[in-house]
Image 1 (spheres, one colour):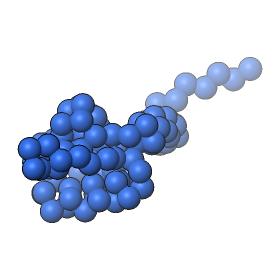
Image 2 (cartoon, helix red, strand yellow):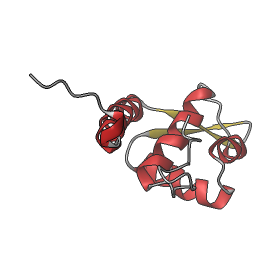
Image 3 (cartoon, one colour):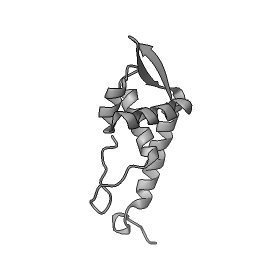
Image 4 (cartoon, helix red, strand yellow):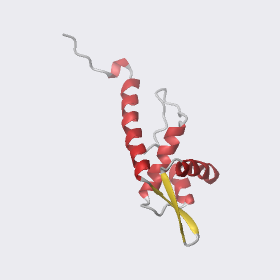
Length: 110
């Protein structure tokens, strides 16, 4: 998923906020409406308090929804959240293509 945190120099790159949002949405999506906070925390590789903040922002933006199941909240992705993920992956593909070094590209000269 988004675990490829190595940058071009081989070091660990810092995840951007959009990467974090996409990671949380992907983890929640994997549980089909039954994602609890600890599952999201483990799946995203982030502490629970940070995940709570991101989930709150995603709910406020209409990308996630919350329900109570057995007195505890569970999360599910909305149609708008899926649209965000589709757009995120498309843009990430474009950015990665642009970031490739010139040696990686094959150009044809006429």
